[in-house]
Length: 207
Image 1 (cartoon, helix red, strand yellow):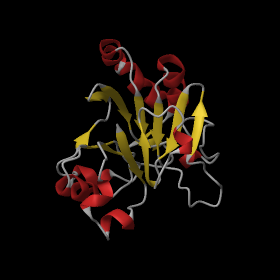
Image 2 (image 1 turned 90 degrees about the vertical axis):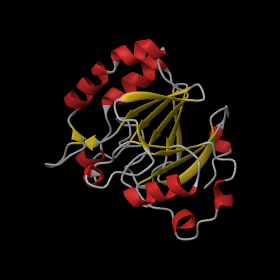
Image 3 (image 1 turned 180 degrees about the vertical axis):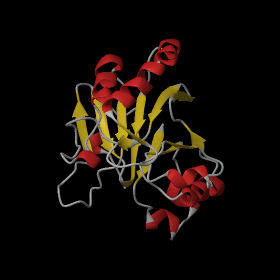
């Protein structure tokens, strides 16, 4: 399964100069947040590819303008062609606003997922907006990751962990690819493509 992961910055390559051939072979599109809802609607409308998303900390506008034709996977496990995908959007709380959480609040969200995790026997892909704690995150509070994500990875050992939030255009160099135990970690900033079946995706990630 070939997956296009996107986050944080709309790709001009896809939006301004769109051709269906650019998405040829893509089976699934996953947004890790902080993208214009019209951009997600555009991708969903002009292709037959399912578009899944979680919220970023700047996505309060989704309440009034939800991405049409897209599937929100917040706090649930979505199964696509047998692949179990868990969604937990939002960032660390650093000011008043929606889609921001303290560590305790994120832990509470995870605890509520336990029945679904039991029913589905875990998950294959973890999709979040923020990174995990000390795994490609920032040391400032707004960009700090969640410890709850590390616990999920350690317990359920998903094949992939997709996140956004830490832009690769920031002064501090953030990695496109990392690995934590047996889980491949991908920063979805702007866009990248990977194969779910690939055992060594860092050598085959494409933009």
